[in-house]
Image (tube, rainbow over all chains, first blue to last red):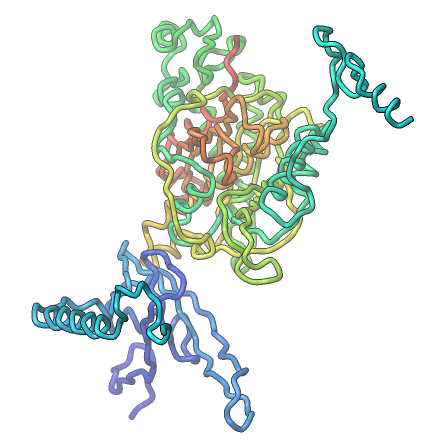
Length: 147
Length: 453
């Protein structure tokens, strides 16, 4: 392959080996801010180009920080176990777009069958409990008390 | 013996342990016990409240303004540094929520309605102008119209010649950009190279030219690169980590601003709208200020208008701000953030003017517990050398702390325009596309003065 210079024909295409993981923010972020976990080697410029060219997302600003993974836990051999470090990127979207992290585990609607099964189960448990109770005429006094 | 003694004690009519005879007026009795109030040193909310009250009493009872300012900013804690010239996105919305400011686009009505009787571009003779000011302004030009403050003084010619003003502006511009032989500007020093000196020259010559008409300008003080600082509390937050974790603290802010030029005057500018007027809504932002992004640091809590308290020119007239190279228009256009260009001007105007007017109010003895009784008005011009944006700010309230803001209906108001170019290009010793409107607005700003009563 001939050496590439700016303006020349592009004969090779390099696909990035990076991955960006969109995460739910731990603290509430403004509406136009999306939080990503990215590779430690990515820079702000890399993140901006990645989102703009591959996903066509307009990016207004990018801020990054490195989260240090703690080294305090100990395994069964008393060796310290490190949690891995990772880089967090806060991306502010352009053109007035907003993003809200979706709820990935919504509560399922209950069908009529499961509801009746739950009722049946509750009634059965009630009956069992009633069988084990003492005679109400004794007024709560245990049955070993007597003549 | 004992019985005799007992009988003597029990003799009727001898009340040695009871009160004095009923019916006689009791003398004024001072309270036997001290008042029942919360402790001062206990670890309780009531004790904290009592300590705060004692601190407020101390500040209220301070003899001089310097003592008040010293006590106000005595306790140092980490605070957010608010920069008026910032690249943060949508910063003007955040700044409006921090300072409880309403932004009204356009200039306030008094500045728009009262046009100074200025000769038109084609020079009209003086005689034809004489009846016009009488019709326009609410008083003849000779009798100094007191209501509109932008009229020229009666002693000098009753109209301003645009040609004179334009020639002043041209002189300053051409001198800095064409006639003077300067080397290439150093990297990222473009603004200090040409627009900075041009602005200084323009403002000082215009102020000197107009001081004949505006006696306030004659008594004013022009500062070069002054420092303006203000420290305030707004809202509450819980301390996240550290030895004070879990406690509820006010959110502290500090503005440290360096305008390019500043005009301070001994008399205050008149109010634009009444103190309690409501011209819009203040944006409410639930997120922490650090999401803007805004960063915390702990250093001196300074309140300063540009001169110390004893200076007679203690009120503000106009500020001039020069945008740095980092916030050039070309950079925003290259990054496709065109809507942020106006945000930069607005955030600079709002933050700088709030800091200046609030510091002026503190110099008069007002603070968040002793709210202002009259509005403080100041003006500002934000420019990057070619584009000019004009702002006018009215400070109606200083009470922004979590406790004082609850029952406070007043809001601060900021009027502002979009940025307009003063000229298009400077080529071969000629200025092309000169915009008179911008120059006239600047002149109106400089001519602003309290109404002559």
